[in-house]
Image 1 (tube, protein in one colour):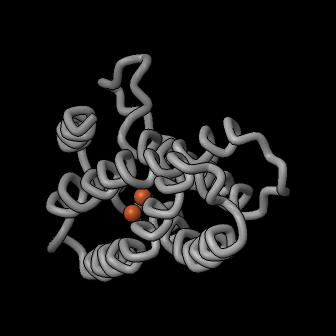
Image 2 (tube, rainbow, N blue to C red):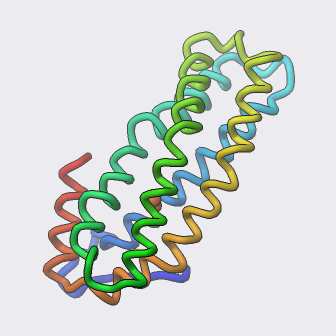
Length: 176
Ligand SMILES: [Fe+2]
Ligand SMILES: [Fe+2]
């Protein structure tokens, strides 16, 4: 793994701020893969399997993802904004990308939420729309996770002290 943060004060079972954010990224990638598989399911797939996959995608992107975005926008951003011009550019880009993700993510949640309650509708047009939505989201997520993992998070680790990291971690826990 490229990034590892273990503040000295962290509890043994606490992964730390950046590691916890990276765990969210792993879930984003994993549920995007589930969404892509759902869109390409062969006819005859058991309805229970469709419901389980669609429910997972709808609830992750509809309920959990907003907490992750709030971690970044409400806990990280205010603590580093205005301290370094290059980081400010990255933060603005991060926010622009979050906004670009909102529309297609809402479509993904609506489509998979519908399929979760009526798995027999995952045919023809619905599967095509789901596939198109995944195709829009995949490059947006690639670009976004690359920015955060390769540029923004390493910069944050350099800028934030242990006290600030502990406060951020507490806010992250408070959202869940
Ligand atoms: Fe993120
Ligand atoms: Fe983000």
